[in-house]
Length: 447
Image (tube, rainbow, N blue to C red; front, side, top):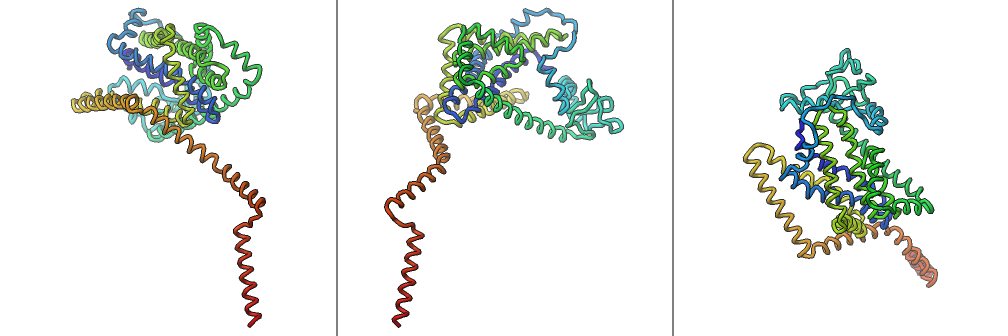
C-alpha cells in the first residue's frame, strides 16, 4: 500500500491537477477576446497558487517532512474503531448511474499493490462467470478490471463474460473518451447558460454581493465547496463569471483559496469513519498543505499580488494569441508532468545505469531551463514570443475574414464597372469573336 510520505506528494500533484478543469472552462470564451482574457486570468490564478505552493512546500517537505511530522503529532498511535463507509451527497446521486455503465474493481487494485509483484492483472483473466450468467453472485471473484455492483447484483454495460485484459482496457479507454466528451459539453453548456442568465440587473447584484472582505470570501468559497464536495465545480462556476466581468480577479482569488480548503473536508470526513490512521493523516496533510499555502500567498499584500499578477499576464497572452490556452494546458498539464515522471522513474529502478542516466537528464533539464531564462530575459525572448503569437493571431484572423473580404472586393469591382461603364472580360471576348465573324462574312461576300 502507499505510505503516508508518498501520499503527501501525490496530494500536492492532485492539487495542481484539479485546477485544469476551470482552465478548460475558460476556453468557452474563445469567441470573445475580452471575456477570454478575464476568464483565463480567473482560471489560472488557481493554477498559480497551486504551482507556487508546491514550489515552496515540496522542497520543504522533502528536507524536513514538515507536513508528515505535523500530522503525526496530531493523531494517536492506535487506530479508530471502524465505522460505516462515508459517501458524499454528489457520489450518492451519481454513483448508481455510473455503476450502470462501468465499475472499477477496487479489490484488484488493492491486491496487486500489496502483493509485491506476485499478482498481476493477467492473473484475473479471462473473466469467467458461473453458467455464463452476468450477475454479481455468478461472477464474484472471477472478474478483472471491471466489476459488478454488489448492491444491485447487476453487472455494468461494459462488463463482458470471457473478456480478456485487452477487452477491459479498451472498454476503459472508451469510457474515458465518453467522459471527456460529456465534460466538455457540460462545461460549454454551463458557460452559455451563465452568459444568458447574467444580464442587466443580475450582473450588478452579483458584483455587489461578491465585493466583500477577502477572508469572508474564503469562508463562502469553503462553504460552497463543502456542499458540492468538489472544488472543480466551484471554480468552474466562478470562471465564466470572471470572464463576463461579474466578479473581479481580486475577488476570485480568495474564493478559489476557500474552495481549496473546502475540498479537503471530503477526505477528512471520509477518514473519520475509517479504521486507518494513515487515511486521516493524509487527509490532514492535504488540509495543512492548503492552509500553509494560504499563509504564504495571501495575508501579506506583496505576496498576494504575485499569483494575481502572474494570472493577469497569462490572461493578456490570450489577447495576443487566442490559441495560447491550448498550448498552456498541453505544456503545463501534460509535458511537464511527463518529464518529471520520467526523471523520477530513472531514480526508482534500483540500477546504477538508470541512476546515472537520471542524473544526466536532470542536469540537461536544469541547463535547458537556465538557457530559457537567459534567452527570455537577456536575448529579448519575450518580445520574440509575443511577435510570433501576434503573427499567428493575424494569420488566423486574416484566414477567417478572407471569404468576407473576397465578397467585399467583388462587390466593389462590380460597382466600379457600373460606374465606369467598362465591360467584363467575357463580354469583351464575345464582342471580339462577333467582330471577327462579321469581318469573315464581309470578306466572303466580296469574293
